Image (cartoon, rainbow, N blue to C red):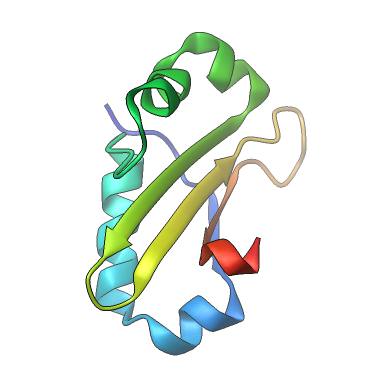
Length: 93
């Protein structure tokens, strides 16, 4: 089961240093609910209904060439903009 990514943005650092194909692959994994390199508790939190009610899904992927990359989807229920997803390095947070 996939979830909506809504509008997708990347930080300037990710856009400058990570190839589009790598970003797309990570977004595909995130949308498919593959949370990457999170511990079991964080993965369970993403999968829990309570986490979805808060409207935030978090993934972390350790890539061999670019280090750790995070993907965060925030679901702004009731907002006109809808959900949005950000691809970023941990240092960008």
